[in-house]
Length: 295
Image (cartoon, rainbow, N blue to C red; front, side):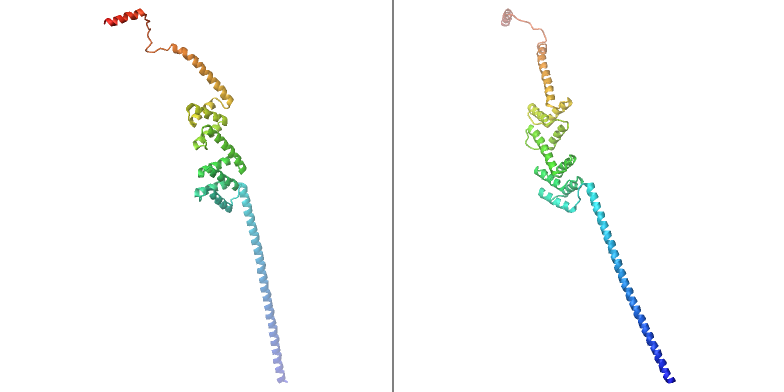
């Protein structure tokens, strides 16, 4: 029996070992399953974290875009114009076509100044260059002066610019023709005209000053005309009616001086008639003649 019992024990032990092995295997499998579950959980956690990270990134990008959009809007509101690099590049190319030569650094700086500092629209800038090129005035100083004048006059549209130029050109053309010129004024002539207009003189009064200059000195002298206008201004002569009155006073004074002048001339003496002259008769002349013949 003992012999039979020991194998049974051994078998039981082995069975226990097998069971234990099975249990261990189950534990291992369970551990493996748990590990897999843990790994899956970790993967899911990473995926969740990635989603959270992507969501945060998207929110950040949207916030950045919102900030940039608001910045652009604020910039546009303060500057009154878009500082659009692509638009500016396009504008420079069109201006270059108007000028018919590659733009120098000074030319490009001027376009930038008009676009970003004076805040002209692209349409107004293109009309500005069209206007200046049409007058054969393509130097930087001239174009800048016109642009600044438009800005000071509050010109913001092409239509306003055209209206301003029409009036401007008409005034200067009329005045220049009064002086006998059929051209635009030179810078010094423009300075004179601008100063006369700033004093409040009308085109008709300036043309009258030009007429009087030509009649007096027979040449279109702006300096002489300036002297006439300055005298008118000093005597508050601003209208044709004022001029008519002062002309009448001047004519009266000249007439009075002409009537007084002959009376004064009779009393005028000089070294040849300052002594009392003697009157001679025919008898006196005969005696003198005999005396001369006897000598």
